[in-house]
Amino acid sequence: MSTAPEIRIEDLRRRQPRNSGLISGHRACLGCGEALAARLVTEAAGPDVAITNATGCLEVFSTAWPESAWTRPWIHSLFENSGAIAAGVEAAYKAQGRSTKVLAFGGDGGTFDIGFQALSGMLERGHNVLYVCYDNEAYMNTGIQRSSSTPHAAMTTTSPPGRERMGKRHLKKDIISIVAAHHIPYAATASVAYPADIKNKVRRAMAIDGPTFLQIHAPCPLGWGHEGDQSIEVARLAVLTGLFPVVELERGGIGSVLQLREPLPVNEYLKRQNRFRHLFRNDARATQELEHLQAIANHNIEFYGLRGDRPAAGDACGADTVRRGG
Ligand SMILES: Cc1ncc(C[n+]2csc(CCOP(=O)(O)OP(=O)(O)O)c2C)c(N)n1
Ligand code: SF4
Image (tube, rainbow, N blue to C red):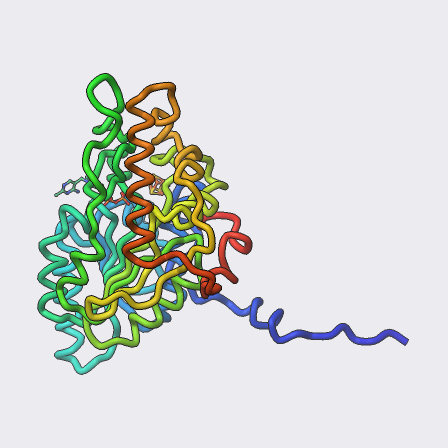
């Protein structure tokens, strides 16, 4: 007599439709961190949202006319005004007595640089909007130009290494501190290597009445110079070296952080990407730049108190369980 196979609730749950806001059919590169992040954010945000999206890769690859990969109301804003459009949509919903949450999306160029004024105004006026910045550390859609988010010493088409300099001269802008300085209730960083952490943070931000901000580190294989199937591994190394701290800032103070049991040397992260390959030449300037980058990671580890043994919530659902980008 055959016995019926055991049915586990976990398997049934896994087979449920994901109800994602961004579905298949978009034209992102293989392993694009932005596509994965957008899928995770919209899955966690649920169906009752409206999205404003600044110009950039996410907008371009998801909306090739006459198609759209979005399953939510979605508005393309200018590069410079995703924050302002989101504020207007939120005010309109409020006037109609509706509770639909507004998500504003922008790349690092659209957030750190060109859309910063509109973002600042939206935060300061207290609009009930979750702003999500997909941080791939350069203007990717127009050919990998440096932004104020590009890390120190990285190669882009406008910060090439050569006789005069070793990649970008300036430091990556500390956007999360600047955003938190607007006295908003919640600002956090996250990484596509820790999907459960992203989803928890989105749910948390969505439950807050007021402006919230999420900066998601999202590898761009084309701009960073690694294979598409390495995106999650590379993103995880940014976190594990301390170069991209995963933290929550609540009303300006440091809340929870993703702790590092044993931070790895920054080389482990840098050597995986062509944008840093000039740092691995036999050149005294390269050694000095590597020391600068290690000093930045050490500062992050000290400043946010990243060193610790506490198992991080994101660990259980990290790179081991996600092998590819969206
Ligand atoms: C005011 C303005 N300046 C420049 C452009 C050209 N432009 C379109 S997308 C883009 C790069 C977007 O970079 P980012 O915001 O980092 O997003 P990514 O493409 O990297 O996702 C640029 C420079 C524009 N559309 N509007
Ligand atoms: S260029 Fe980079 S950010 Fe743009 S779609 Fe390709 S992988 Fe994604």
